[in-house]
Amino acid sequence: MSTGANRAIWGSKIGFVLAASGSAIGLGNIVFFGANAYRYGGGAFYLPYLTALLVLGLPMMIVELAIGQQERRALPGAMRRTCGKTGEFFAWWSLLNATIIAMYYITILAWSASMMFKSFGPLFADGAASVGSTFGGVLTSWMTVVFTIGIWALNVLFLSKGTRTIEAVVKLFVPLMWVFMLMLVVRGLTLDGGFDGLLYLFTPDFEGIKSPGVWQGACSQIFFSLSLGLGTMTAYASYLPKKSDTVTNAGMVSFLNCSFEFIAGVAIFSILFAFSMHPGQDTGTLGMSLVVVPTGIAQFPAMQTLIAFAFFLLMVVAGLTSSISIIESPVAALQDKFGWSRRKTLALVTIFGAAGSVAFALPQMLTINDQPAQPLGISLLELFDHWAFGYSLLVVGMVEAILIGHIYGIKKLREKINAHSRVKLGAWFDFQIKWVVPVLLGIVLLFNIAEECGLTIEALGISGRGFYIGDSKQTFDGLSAMPIVVFLTWFLITLVGALSITAHKGAQK
Ligand code: TRP
Image (cartoon, rainbow, N blue to C red; front, side, top):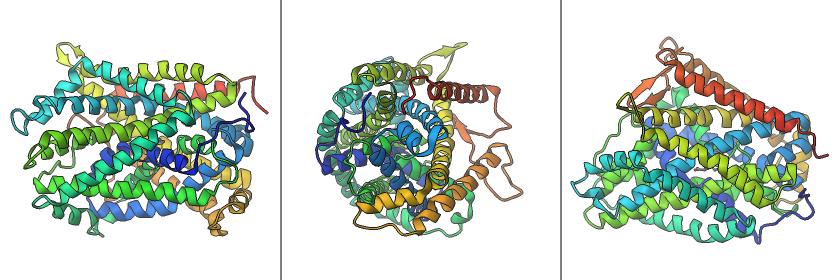
């Protein structure tokens, strides 16, 4: 069993910061932020987003880093040592969610990688209109399965020697994605009309802020973007020396992530506005970055192929430094718990995970009763995303805050943090974790559930979010039984899995 004493350690402080910011910066910053900011209306999104960063994101980042670093364990071990069995149980539940998110995250990466190779070919052959059909072709091609397995293989390679290989990868990839993104911003803003996108994104819209949906979207976005709620940050922090400065680390990682998100937003919105493209409320999340933005790039005055290639490469590079962190979370936890070798643990997680990723890709290629099953596949992916993004991260965050705040005692944690941090946390931090975070997340979750139940509450003036199957928005009442069955199955599997692992005899002390 790997104990705290002989645990691997990051080669340098910068190695950790690159790895953790590489985890945070990913498809969430490029794909999901743009789509959410659009859906919830630019200037109406940014203020709730910044509020969620300060009120929820930063404090929870500090907590997740602190417990990993102090206990030198991945999430379940760290929660067990701080909060006992209940804590460990919730940690395993969140790690099963992590594995599911890793599955579809990698499917999306495989689609991005396919598009990257297509950008050399006839992606733009018949003018801009062909990007959509190229993506349709990618979705239905068996090559996607090959790409999915290829991306998993890269993840295994990058994780094979733990912190050593992770560090080597992020030292190359993280600077690279900043360079690509900065180039894209400059190109976007210098397009005719590009600047309007900036104005749309950052002109506050005080009317829009009144809708609870915007706040819910902003809270989910912050959790996903900062890699919170899946044990990722705890696993990475467990490889830090005990005396690291948690507050500085949390601040740096959050700052790097949100500034990348900021400029990614500028790049995407300037391209949208330069070509007066209006994806509309109902653009599925993926369509925005895999079709709409590339369609804009296809209309660039010069170097379309090169820029399109760089854009998709950016998604792949940024996504890989995130996917390795999502996978590291359950891998580190299983190693802690059972003392398995890294090779064996990685193999197990990969077999399970890669099967899932292929399952997310497959329905795109099948036909049912001579009808393409594609909408089913997209809806499956979006359905899981809907539950994971809108619920499980927030539930885990809420439970973590309650357990650490009340059971372990946030004051104890804060004193340990302050012993080694340059900026000291005041007593306000205790109140924040004990009350503000759980209550806020609780309210957001209640609103989500209310909306889900079709209390799409015209009466309350709240517009329902629902989720999308193809182009049509689904709410709870209009829904066929299938997605509900899928969700309940998922829930049951994770519950049983978590229970059985928690109950495992070989429990560590
Ligand atoms: N933060 C990453 C992104 O923005 C994705 C990610 C990595 C993540 N680890 C996570 C999301 C843990 C939620 C929880 O793309």
